[in-house]
Length: 222
Image (tube, rainbow, N blue to C red; front, side, top):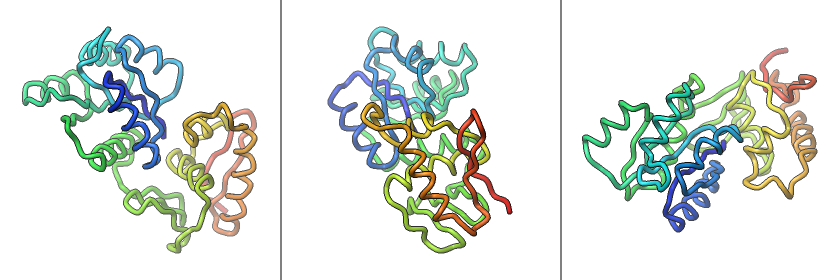
């Protein structure tokens, strides 16, 4: 999963991006409110973490502009402005959640995962495709209720696919959610990883199909 982090404190933003990546959330960072909407237009994100005290355009202005375009992207407000009026105001304005600074990293990660799951129509902590399941608590896969051993890259690719069950994803879209900087990674590496995953899923009625011109899709069937 990839999120956009709009935060004007460089040290906090740098630390947060590294910490979120360790938890499986890739984060791109902008420090000016005027850069948020162009960044969202240039890349497909799963959520936006938005500070209210941004230069250029503050968080309220960014949120208003985003919702005016009818974009349904999940937005989590992350700010030092912790007051009831601020919380109610941003939620009424279209924010999906609100977390005050200082915050606990585990809580931020949990809230982001919950927002993204709800946006995809599933509020459950466990995602599945037939006998294949991913548990958000253990961050592990099971196949036929037995732990599925994967390399870190295989795990990352399969996690992207199970989060988009039935939805075709191109190699570029998968790569965008697997590595933080894909400039040094060949998109063809996704083919190799998918080939390995197909072997691991063989005989389970879970398959990774290929839709010509669209990409790979995780499916359950004979």
